[in-house]
Image 1: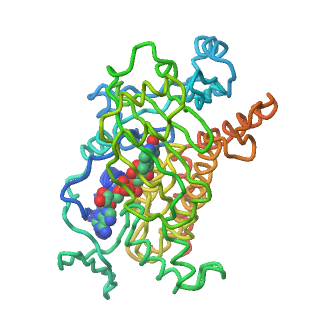
Image 2: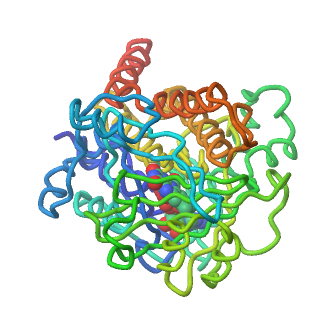
Image 3: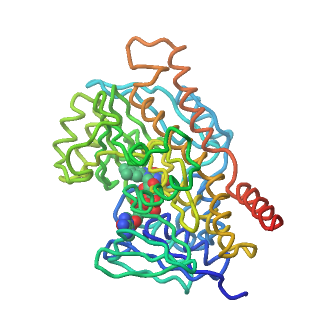
Length: 464
Ligand SMILES: Cc1cc2nc3c(=O)[nH]c(=O)nc-3n(C[C@H](O)[C@H](O)[C@H](O)COP(=O)(O)OP(=O)(O)OC[C@H]3O[C@@H](n4cnc5c(N)ncnc54)[C@H](O)[C@@H]3O)c2cc1C
């Protein structure tokens, strides 16, 4: 293999940062330094749904073998469709191997809720604990990847000689040729890169003011709070309806609960959401994440059906309270020798279970571009533009779809606003709207995107 042409520094050792390092190792020999602000590569978090596109990235990185070793099952194939009746759904599953991924049920009734529809997918997601995904990615890091913990980036400066100096909050510095911000929703790299993109003059007219741009690229509160926890399966009776579907969505007006088993059934992932009217886009006063007593969740979902109460009773005494923040449409992903990826670029709501998957797709594409034999330090700025052109639009579209799904689950969308009695035609439009958004996320393959990227890279090289 030819000697490395440049060094890459990744700021942030989360799912995106680790995937980029793994891709650089798999497809080349670029030396990589990961700078992580925490004292160790974090394993906190709960369930992550891995959909097919993400799974394809994982296979390319050699993770199937690692998953087999850990007995983590892979998704099944089948036919997809929105289906309205449980009975019909069971027949369908048996006859076509379709995969029931989400059973939506109106649950804000103290006596009994009612099924609204069953979402059937062409394949199931792999429900993983974030800890296990991090562990899998760590197992495929290349030898020339060095992880530096307790290194919080505060800023970077460009020195001559294609060198960028990284400044950390402990007063230390480090140098690199290419910097990638995988530093999550509160990204330092995104904010500084914004100023550089502004200077380049390529932003749309309405964003060509530092104040307007800063506001546009800051995370916003979605108006939603989510209580997050893991439930031990033995705390829920074996004939609880939860076990009938891969996932359950209990819906009510401005509230919903998502539950699904993860990591081979070792835990049930529990997410309970409520949305504050007109809260979206307003400043959130208080800590984004804190512990909360279980009683808060019980209060928020008082009067919901008995199956829900059983799940709430099974919660640990303390749960996690998150003020759900997301990005709008960040108008850039790379400039010069600096790029951003994952939540730094497109943090999104959790309703599509796509944030980690999108981070991994960014990392895979960027990693393959940077590792390619045609990429040199001189054409890295052109490579960044290819990355931006291919990833920005789909990532921002996913942010939008995920937001819309949240509105629909909480009976707060234009198709169905939760009023009763509801006509079949209204419910059907609502089901189709949900299905359409999921279906959009099931299309295509990251490998096809890579082929397009490689063609574009070829064109850049031929132009020279
Ligand atoms: C409740 C909830 C449920 C979710 N469910 C799903 C799901 O089912 N499926 C899915 O795909 N996604 C899901 N997500 C989203 C997913 O967790 C994120 O999109 C994903 O973790 C983003 O990865 P990342 O590497 O971009 O950022 P992160 O995982 O946030 O990693 C960023 C890293 O950078 C470090 N860092 C931050 N600032 C600095 C700095 N200045 N210097 C150095 N290091 C720094 C942080 O410590 C962290 O380790 C969920 C998110 C939430 C909140």
